[in-house]
Image (tube, rainbow, N blue to C red; front, side, top):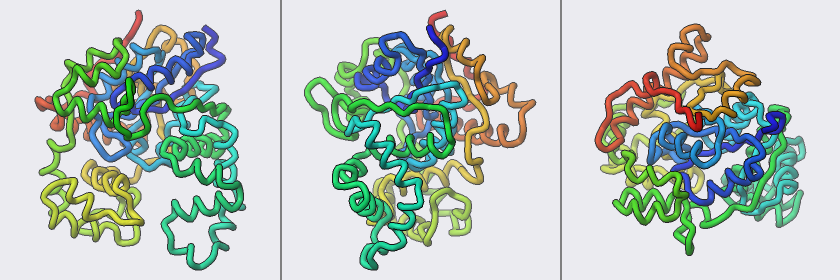
Length: 391
């Protein structure tokens, strides 16, 4: 296999379904190219606990064609699209990826890159500042959409409304920002729409999570590759098992405690704390705190970020944490451009930044263990062995 050409995929696989398998096959060009998965850990971008832990999802990725699985650390995995993409692209570049493969609703790499170039250029800043007064108070997403429509046309504006397109544009922006030698390559998203209902023989990850949590694992597995059917017998996690602890933490907090929590501004902490004193469930809390300016997803991320203690993290991930690999993955690691971590003890000789990122991950994983049914002991981040597949 030619290691000079390596495909990267930034993913959550929460859980891995037939659409993900199609993307993995596309990335490998039918088994001709090695594939690196940059995988979110035990907490994911929507401000939630992953249904299956990172080790099970790593095993699923390797079983479906990945050669190397690198963990996207907590403060990037739990961030908004821009930071999520920046961390993922930085790790893909450090792992030697030469192309980044991702699904999108438009399936047009050139369009996505054109939008990304505009959003990172001076014209976008100028257009925002010179927009009519009645647009200045609109939410940023709407102001951005109108600026794109003005400069690039309605097709581009329509693209920015779709969730996978939005993340794809952030990948392109991150590649440009980091000046990474990576070619972004999109393919048309396959199967059910993002967070959409089941369609014929296709189901989104959110639909599968609902089936699994409702005890319908056999039905969920019918929308997943046979290689990952072992997940039917894997313990599952739910944020609902942490609900009382999260509400307690918020009810005993003061606004100053939120000072270093990412994405908190404009007095949003006061709105969240007031909601926490009234709400008796997390869903009620999210509904009370959200608004036109602050989306449900952003509120979820802030609440969970505060609960997990995410503060003062570096701009980019400082190491490559390997969760699993094939023999090809071993060869890929020889060209790594960041320190490689396969065991916790390897952090002892690393700098304080590396140690602080890993320590935060370990603490979050210990909390995640309480969200699993049945609850698990602490220590998995330090004690779990590297997954070797195909040796």
